[in-house]
Length: 356
Image 1 (tube, rainbow, N blue to C red):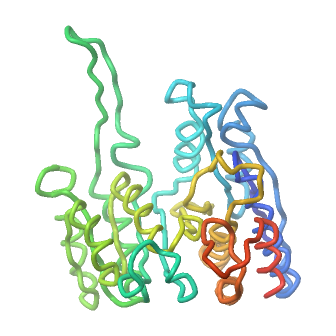
Image 2: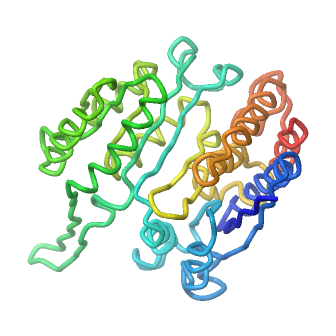
């Protein structure tokens, strides 16, 4: 029986409610396909600060590094917002985990399922059939550049450096081109090359690399235009590749095409151990109320089976089960429509398990 070890890190807020639903799904998959999943719990984020004083305890990083994959819930919340910026959960745990695991690529698909066309805030004819994926560079750019803040004669000066190297751009772009070959063979590279020197290097590097992929169409798009085009005509996109901050913003925008950010899974890969998490945050306003949508986390678990374990059939079975549940009348609050039945986080998870 194949055995896979998974570091399970619920984190904060709704993380402790959504992660257990993904574990139920994995247990069912294990029983059905004769796999053994070992769940290894760990603390991160605000929960880790409260318990140990550190957002990313050394033992949690070691746990993740020693596992085959990481399943993460969410980190952060207002309780820890008064901490100095470098100590806040979002920086001290999430960014540190990505760096510690060498996760340079974040993959975020945005698919509008037929059953959720009406849940989107955009017109059905705009979002129907949308199926795109964003490859976001994850360990470079302004988030990881040198930062400083100092007093000046008239107040303060704050500075964040945006730095990229050719190698960092090449490796994320190559992943995007390879993915496009398996999809509709189109890559949209997003930058701000009319203003930023880092974006000019980005555009030059991606253009040069595209010569190795003559079967893939490459287009370049400024980030502000891309933000507009995602709303105007999202079906034009297949694979989008972009730098860290642009990707952070655009993927949240793309999430709303699907009806709810609660539907958007993600995979962070690049090192030996991949990390899988829903794209939404800890949602402290609904934490502890069983209102959260667990489907993004369940779909993130499917991505884990695909990218970390090479279990494509098992991943597709989970994705099919989610579609079948959505084709029914059950909805969590974020997807609720007239005539549908409101269900809790746990009830939605059980519906997916039942489909399996």
